[in-house]
Length: 185
Image (cartoon, rainbow, N blue to C red; front, side):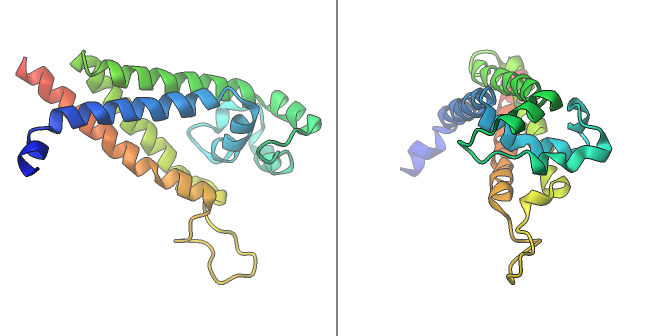
């Protein structure tokens, strides 16, 4: 078993690439649907790296809190606000970018230079996502009177974000493996 595992690293890195592709394609593809687009707005509105993509003035950045639909809920006034805010257009563009990275990751199996780029992009995207732990108040359990709130108590949004630590590691492994292949040629 140890022998098999020791000699299977390259195949396991390919499985890692396919796994990253599936996650990127699925999550990126979901960005085409309103519920997902509306769900990312707290992250985007609070991010110094992304908030300028929205039509909201910085003084109105918290307005998304008044226009949140629960997953599966359809409130026409909230949808109109998101349309005017640029929520859906931004989400479509972000989803396309994420799917594109996923495609590059899987192409890296055959083309190491593309693999190197895709690993760097995956790691970079993960760093931006992880920054939401600092910029987005919704990533921490709010103080609603209970004893467990704030740091280190991650909310559902925070638990979603922290998983990008795995994508960061995957991106670095993919970039490293691709760089190794480039140097061996």
